[in-house]
Length: 205
Image 1: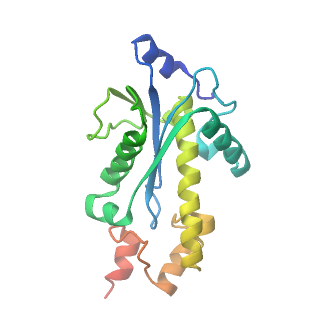
Image 2: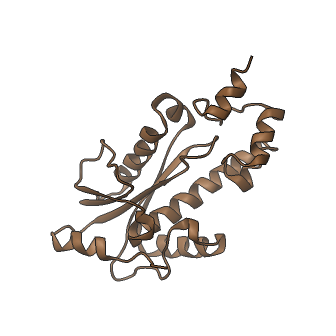
């Protein structure tokens, strides 16, 4: 299994860029909750060991790496709300979250490595899309870890207010428990009304 490395960052540094941020988002697929993005500028001299796509890491490993990332890198996290997801669409909302995360880095980055093949249009810096970037670039991997943990914590908090949907475990993804609860308990203010399973319950005859 190949691990992400620093080669994309090194290529950008060779072009004269110094503040290179990896950017990733999490939460496009869930039926509930925000979409969350992170932007991370790693210190080339202190890259945490074992960075990888957050989906390939255990919770314990993610949390240990998160502490290392916050200890050595510059990190910004941002969200787009359920209302924004429903009014814009999920792709645009996830790009908005990325734009907000990049904007929250101060001083700003001068080059961006974005997970995926689309560059959010609101970004002003030179940027490069990296398909499956969380498995290729350590900066994007770091952003994927930070974004996932931040969003999971939001969902755990929301699960306290709206028990029964299993958000503390499924993070709002359409697990069987979550789909069954939607039918039994109904739609909450944190559900994405533009997503078909939610829409169908709201507007069934």
